[in-house]
Length: 309
Image (cartoon, rainbow, N blue to C red; front, side, top):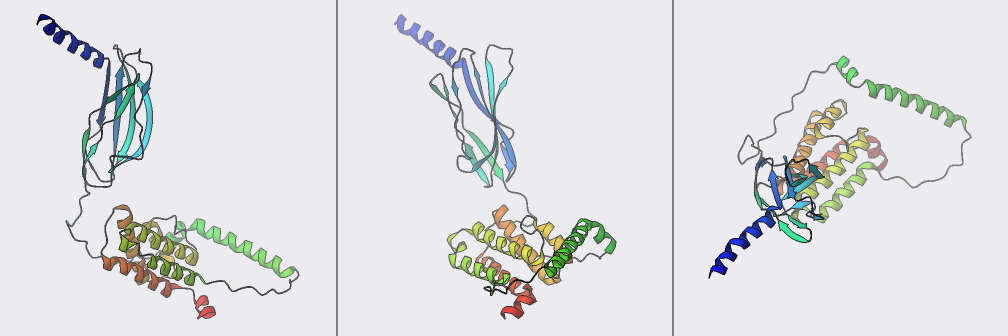
């Protein structure tokens, strides 16, 4: 009886000493953040200097399915005046799904023995909107007064580039006119830009992406075709510009006010679907396709109309 009591006193103290020599933990900058914001997650281990090997948890692209790993900043050794040494590993995480999400326990292996941290709970909140449940109508476009001096200052580089291009073209034309004319070779007619874009839109529509739930892929494909058409048709960097930059660039294009407004509406809706994970209605998905087709037909080159009907 005395032996049993003695063992119950000695063994817990031994177990505590062993676990106290190595401590693992996880903490966060904050447990509540808004969708798309980034939070630092720090894994740490305090261990005896005599520890020979530490195997850190394997980290993938996500944690628990709803938390995305943006960056892994590696392991740092933190100076300590105590008997234990500390190492920290910092992850930068984010989430695009609102709700309460668990950070699962992290598994360490210290000198061949597994250890786990505690699980944590995060709350991801949505970004407050002006309206709780309905989308507001798009307001009329405000036309700013045109200033030639301001326009020239903003587009000096483009103007100088245009002059340089014209000079190069003039030189090329001059050299071309002086060279002996080669024998005329019949070439296959090239397919006009608008026909290529309309054919690609028809193919996309037949794939029925949004009907299968892939709203993001559907709107990304449409806007890629639309931006590629604008870049080739009006010679602006549409594919690498944001929506705001592209709309500003097209203010001096041949597009009418209604056409620019129609284009902005389509791009804004696609941005909401791709980046804010908004789920559009069936009518909005169908209207996106019909509006894009109408925009291409209304703005196609008159030379293409003459050459191909």
